[in-house]
Image (cartoon, rainbow, N blue to C red; front, side, top):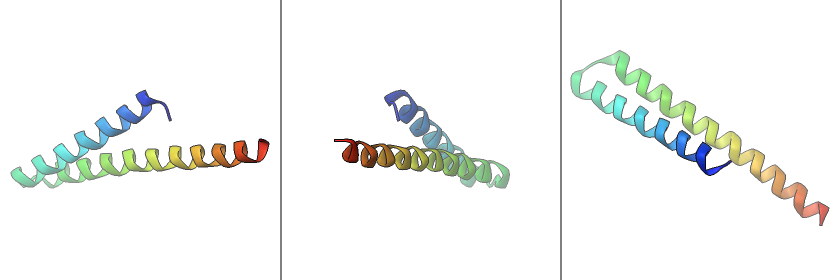
Amino acid sequence: MSFTDKAKSRAQELAGAAKERIGDATDNERLRAEGANEQSAARARQAGQNVKEAGRNVRDAFDK
């Protein structure tokens, strides 16, 4: 995962957290759910990239 991809995922996660907190403060259930969804999507993307990197590391270990 490149630095740019990591930064984008982190920014999306932080934006989701902000939306969720604003939803809590304003008692807006839709905004709260939207924020939670954005956070989940960002975390899932990060997890997927981590799995791909781990697979590459294992493959590289056997190639040497």
